[in-house]
Length: 228
Image 1 (tube, rainbow, N blue to C red):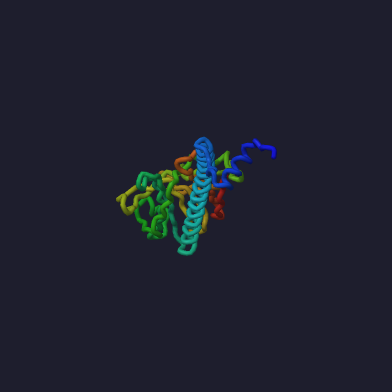
Image 2: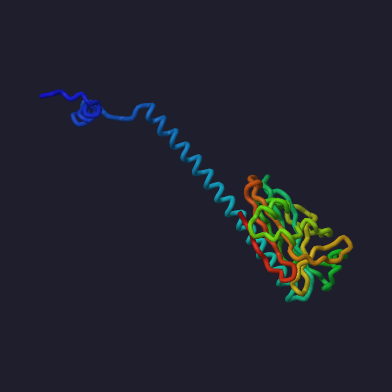
């Protein structure tokens, strides 16, 4: 009978006859571990990106909902409502608090005269920072980049007690009139009607790659959300 010198045949023969145990070599195991590490690293990077994008989108829609609530309150109560932003950190991570206050006497000058009260509990947007207008004006598709006024152009802030932070100053204030229009408070207490008012949010720490914008149309108060 002719002898077969094929290594694979010899290995299978030894296994079936009980002469030896077939297994992986150390080099083979190291190769498998290296491949698994690469796959896991790639998968985690993609998953982290998806989680960041999802959180950023949720924050944008939460802000959009608060804007709608402020506009509705101004119209139904026939008063003025102001929405402001405060940037801080929670356990080392960036966050933005959004507060909404309403006029006590129904006058546009009540913000300047400190005659206002809290409308709803401040909303906390976690793991985001306020974006510069240049981060979204010419970068996000669909944004009205010809008539947009960023909320940072607002000239009159307000103060409010924020749990865990004390009395803080909310800036980038947006004003809602009784007719539902959107304005930016001026330094003299007057309101400037804008065609569009925008607020941008950057994901952190990857703020240079993930941005969303909430744009509010001045006359109608309609809210639009734009993202990459």
